[in-house]
Length: 297
Image (cartoon, rainbow, N blue to C red):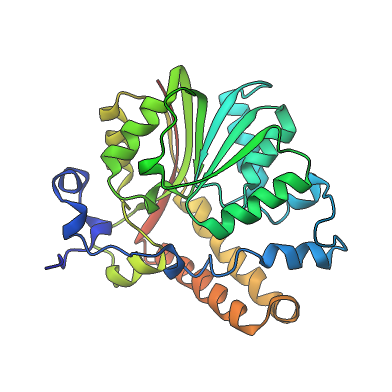
């Protein structure tokens, strides 16, 4: 029997006690309408005059290969804050098309392992990295982070944008991050959180719309990392900023309706419109918020 309590609003202490088998969680990340078609980025490139299998100037990708809020501005903030430098070994959890990994590798010469669960996004990311000539610095790995094993390659830094809340078993994921990080290493995370668990919203729908398997409050987020052994350096509430960002993104998307449909078709437009609209709604009713978390081992 499945629990009727929305997993998204259960406290962190309760999450630890509940087994995944008893939880009513989404089974497929494709329930999240941000991810219906990984290859759409190739049409964006074609629209720029870059043909299939041609080499790509990595900088031409920066405008649309980032799936998180504020794009390369956020990734550059990560580079500056963590003082990432040439030769550092990084792990990105939930790399999508690999945009942040390529940006970091290109800008500072770090070696990045880009971990992505969705095979279609992994395949596209691998192709883009190869065509940008960055395969010597970015390694793409398609796997579930909870089963990911890399015992001999501890990382200087671990980074993640809008991905950890997808992963069930928050306790295990935090411990795995701690194990994979070198002593003195740092973690940079931006992620969605629960803002008000009493918000007037259909939590089961939210859970499916966002593929939310461990959506928790900022306080619980900090506690999980502290319990895993981390020192919290920065915990910044991003809710107001991201709420405005998502409103602006939705407005801009609607303004580009005809252009988008001409390039990608109406079906994809409708799916992404739904997702962008629902994110705005969930921020507006204060169901969700966001954080930037920086911590040290």
